[in-house]
Structures are given as C-alpha cells and as structure tokens.
Image (cartoon, rainbow, N blue to C red):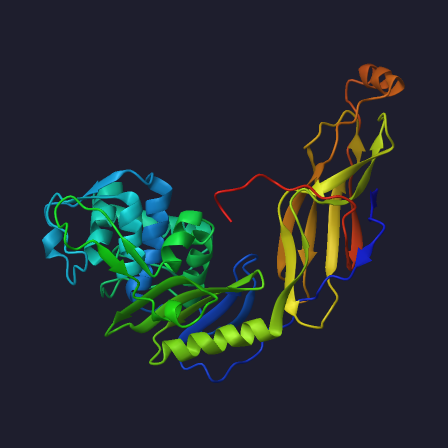
Amino acid sequence: MMRAPRTLIPLLLLAPVAAHAEIIAKSAIVIDAGSGKVLWEKDADTPRFPASTTKIMTGLLLLEHCVPTEIITAPQDIEKIKEASLHLKPFEQVTAKDMLYALMMRSANDGSHAVAVHIAGSVPAFAKMMNDRAKQIGCLNTNFHNPNGLNDPLHTTTARDLALMAREAMKYEAFRDAVRTKKTTISRSINWKDTSLKSHNKWLYKDPSADGIKTGYTRPAGHCYVGSATRNGFRVITAILNSDKWQEDHKQMLDWAFAKFEKKHEIKAGQVVGSIAVKGGSVAEVEVSAQADLYAVGRKGEEDVELTFTVSELAAPIKQGDVVGEMVLRDKDGFEQRVPVLAQESVAMTPIAAVAKTANTNGLAVALGSLMFLGAYMARGRRTMGKAVRQ
C-alpha cells in the first residue's frame, strides 16, 4: 500500500476560468508556463494569421537541429525575401546562435529563410517540419507555410497553439536568453557594419518581469504578440492575435493572472512523497520520490485538490530508481498532471522469498492498486537533480 508522509499541507484547487471582457484582441489566451494550465482564453482556437510570431517555431527548430557554433550560409536567392531585415547577402555566413538572436530580436525574415534552407533544404520541406513539430507539441489547428510569417492565405495558427509552441521553446535556456535580450552584437561574414541588434519587443523595456517572447505584424494579421513574464517564480505565457492595442491587452492579462493565481506547494524532483509496501523484501516498505517537478497553480486563497497515487504492489528485488507508480494531480476543471514515482533505494529479496521465487517459475503476481489523497503533503526528505539545459 501507499503511505502518506507524516506532515500534510493542503494542495490548492485550481479555479475555473473567469471572463475578461476588456481584452479587445480577436483571439487571446494566458497559460501557466510550467504546467500548461489555461488560466483564461478568448476565441483561442480560431485559425488566424500569426505574422512574425511564426518565428517562435523557426527558432525552436533551429535550436533542436543546430549546435550554437554551426555556420548557416544564406542561399543564393536570399535577396528576394521581402522585408529582409538582416540584409543578408548571398552566401553570407552567420552562426546558429547569432541567427537565433537575429530571428527573435530583429525578426529577420531573410534569416528565417536561410535557416529553413539550411535545415531542410527548402522552404516547403521546412514548413512540413514546422507542422510536424507543432503536432508533437499538441497543436491542433496550425498550418505553417513559411518560416517567417509573411502573409500567405495558407499560413495560419491559433492563440492556443502559439502558447503551446512558446511553452515548449521556453524550456530551452538558449531560447530564454535570446527572447529576453534587449541589445546585442552578432558576427557575420560580409555585412560587418550591420551587427547591432535591438529587440523589437517594446514590452521588454516597460515591464521588469518580462522575459520574452515575440511580436508580429502584417496588415492582414494585425498586431500579434506572444509574451512571457515571471513574478515570484511563477511564469505565465500570453498569446494575442489581431489586436489594435496588444500592449494594453498583454498588460491586463498579466496583471489579472498574477493577481488571481499563484504557485502553491511545489513538489521537487527527488522529493520523497510516501512509501510502498514490498513483498518478500529485506525491508517492509520502500520510500518513493517524484521523478520530476510538480506543482499546483490556482486562485489565491482557495485550497482543495485531488491527488491520486497509482502504484504496483511491489515484490523484491527492487533497484534504486525503478519506476514503481505515478502521481496524478487533478483539479476540479479536469486538468491533470502525471509524474512517475521512483524507488528511493534498492531492496533485496529475503532468503525465503528467493527460494519461493525459484520454485515458482511464473514469479510473483503484480496487482495494481491506488490510493486517493485529498490534500497534499510535505516531503520528509528532498533531493535535487543536476542542472538541466531545459527548464
């Protein structure tokens, strides 16, 4: 069976989404960056033109397919790209790291084209990669047709899908560094005079908590924005499509989210969360820990959540680090988070159990069991994982 730790702390029950009538964007959404929980949304699944917020996906694929020092060479047709803000010359060379900054800060359309050709060989092939990656992330209404967001009737996505892409990209430290940078200098092989970059994201200069992400504008798309801000260790992501007042919309969404919601009672990777009985072992039970970070986000002042442990009835031997079950955190809106739990130590078989196992070629039967907890807990011990590249 699963035994709860001795000290109990209530977990927060996530509150239902509230209406927000003052947002004028055609589509908008705000989510918790850590869990992906939607805090508020408005027409978030209607496909619309995303303009240069498209470059979030281009930047993500650049990070996932190139090392920082990799050289990207501009193709021969580079000067045909409209609004070519990096002013690349045919066969000009820029490192992948500097190109990421050019995409996210200066919104380089020509840089995006160079990245697409470098990674996939052609824009259509890269667009397919973009759409395939979007589906992997969970985007259901995205159809990218180019890497830069220049207007194309076939090039659409949604506020929800953009928020999901941004959440995935923000897991990368290199991406976070690029989108929060206000000014930097890059190196390039031909145009040495045009090396200074200044972020087009005006909100970075207005909000100390802002840490990204990407602006966008074309006449058909209107003003678009995907933003990120972190306050008291709590990061939210907004996505706004077609707004005449994107900064006001973004500010209202941020202020509302941080005023109403907060992180509560985090469970850290490696933290002990309980113990499971062991059959035929040298000890009667083994402590288990969370494999990854887990926390609840919800309205301030509201407490109550359902935490379910689904575990296997364990039989020795067990190795330290074996997955022995999972925690399921579920709020009243039906939003779930699942994290495996791991054995904290190895457990050897007793001599009697070893003899019984030898005699029974079918081994010990494993039965599934579960234990429901209302409320949360504080761990008796805590371990931290090594520094990760992704966050």
